[in-house]
Length: 309
Image 1 (cartoon, rainbow, N blue to C red):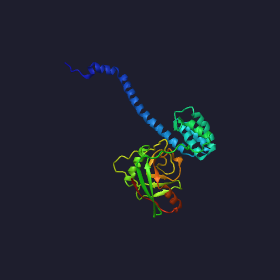
Image 2: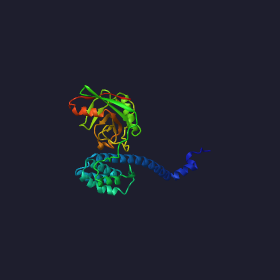
Image 3: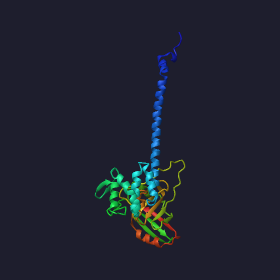
Image 4: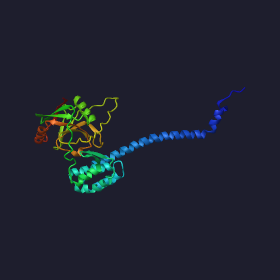
């Protein structure tokens, strides 16, 4: 009696008869999985491309003949077009550029019907485009109406001692915005507690601010690099005089530099949305401003110490 093999079974006959159908099914399933993975990757790349395009278009000065070209480029990407228009409007209003505002007004009118992008105002929520149109019509050249003031910080305090010319020292006391900018505030506290500001250099920035350098952290061999620290755009926190903020890594829109902190010595609203406001100086700003005004350009400015109070 001969032994029965798999080829002699009804299952084998069925598989053979339906081989093409089965192969097609496997191919379809594999195709769906591949498409889903590829589509997710493609979507991420598309969003990254849009984000980079927004950074390039929104960072440029709004005035000049290039504005029309930048607006045309923005229209090609519906993701970023409204944001480029509104950021350009804010910057044009800040500088009082009436020619740029005239170009931007019809763009805002076209966007005003869509109020999905809303802003909180003292009178309640309203569409951002409609709000900006009101500001233009009222001939408001400043980006911040008087009633838009940054809140008083409620977080822990820090102390930064700065030396000018190697002799005189000035003490800044600042309160953190831990509730409004939790990631940035936590990062600054961590850097201070690790002593990364102590003894480091500081660089005056033409009267607009004082850039504080941090001791660079050496990566631990075999360890994963820390995740990127992204900007926190909290409504109501503006880059006003006396604010302490992080800085953006050049060319990496929204990514905050873990090696630099800036003390603003004057209103710098052009930085709104590009870097995280983490604290506000509540003591010692005016004496330091006066000292930096009279300090020789070649004099050494440094950080004596920084600590959490």
